Length: 341
Ligand SMILES: NC(=O)c1ccc[n+]([C@@H]2O[C@H](COP(=O)([O-])OP(=O)(O)OC[C@H]3O[C@@H](n4cnc5c(N)ncnc54)[C@H](O)[C@@H]3O)[C@@H](O)[C@H]2O)c1
Image (cartoon, rainbow, N blue to C red; front, side):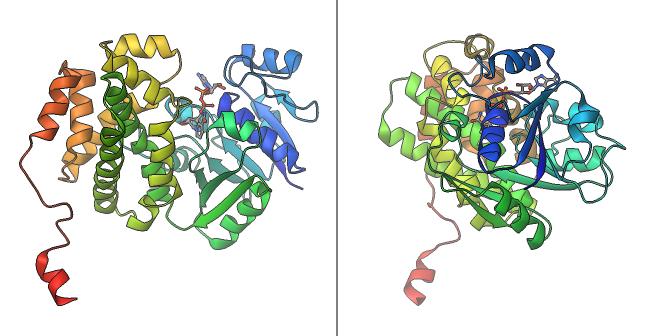
């Protein structure tokens, strides 16, 4: 049994806390938002982010960060990605050697283009930072529906330790050394989910969705490989796996925002209507910046950027994508490669 704190009490923080409590661990949930702490303490439920999922009385709820992190084996950062830096900064000087931090937020920081684990490491000097990601909607994990994720850590021992903590009959955890690949897949799929939503909003069909998922993962892996991630990771749970679930599910706020934009809403109107942080909007800017920095061609992500920030109509963006220069599906697979095989 481990002592675990979950920092962040939105849908994902609650679902993780419920899972770990069911696994027999001592779980504490902390939130920076007093209203969340009050709601959880009095109703044992986050009625806004994860209605219908009960937070057991065994799970401690606190607004006191020091209390939340003292004598914990594992500290899970489950705040929205835009609050990872400010939350990590509050942990500076507080983390003891041996405590493990798990990032579960998905994003790339605007301007610095840093991943969430990079941010945490830059703020908390002695941190042993790991990541857990994959196709895992809180609404389904909270209900105990079978789910798989992957944990990335610097050593196999740390990865296996976390694997054992999370694993259950309804939550299967794989491990990987590729922290960067896991993080990039999780952040960039949100941009493609916006595109998939836009296509749905325009009334397009399953063919379009499949094209966006397939060409989307091609773009994500191009950038990931240029940045040092492994292609296998991008075609695994935290890459294509998370991309499929996000593009297909109404649980995805990125897809829901995209649908509204496809139907004619502006980015700001869509974000207001979804009424939650739409992380893909921020990751779009970072992805475009990274594509330019690493000289990688990412036409779908560029098109989403033009729709969100430069006023291009969704329909015109699709036309431009369809009528781009004709090309080979995989430039690394040419006729000689097949003929020689
Ligand atoms: N919801 C899911 O199904 C799911 C699944 C996997 C990963 N994730 C990732 O986990 C992260 C959290 O997701 P979520 O759905 O719980 O998000 P959310 O937007 O519901 O919750 C974010 C939480 O951040 C915290 N927060 C808000 N303002 C804050 C502030 N100023 N300072 C510190 N903390 C603040 C609050 O506790 C809030 O509940 C995201 O990065 C998301 O991509 C979500």
